[in-house]
Length: 157
Image (tube, rainbow, N blue to C red; front, side):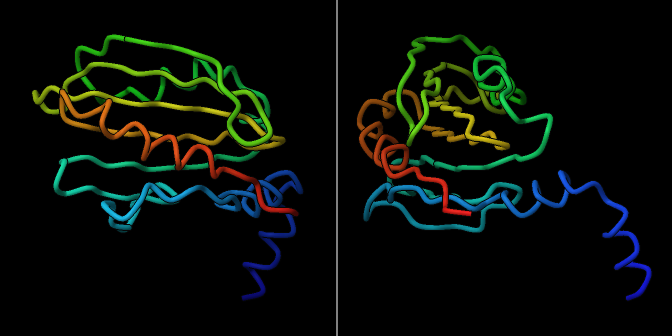
């Protein structure tokens, strides 16, 4: 235990602050058709089994995420998908800040999908919001995804 305390004391204050900030935000609910699931490495995740879709949100905090280029960060969210093409990009208020929202067409393990990707910076953190939907379902699921974005707020520190 003493070793752990010594190690924590040696960590930069910015690192300790960043760890405290991650996950400290709220979102809207995508609605009754969505089920909360274990989020793996993300902060929150929902699935809509009837539509074969998922939504997840994640936060990363610290100096390197402080005010990163949201367009570049949105592109990074498509890593792991194949044949990614961007369909739409727009700037939109996400909580108190302007962020970027995109739609993409891609393949995941060879299966065609559509993606909704949103990124916003707030203070020391970058917040990501991703919708993965079957081709032909993105438009129908967009209001659910937008509800998650519309409910975004950073908790008071």
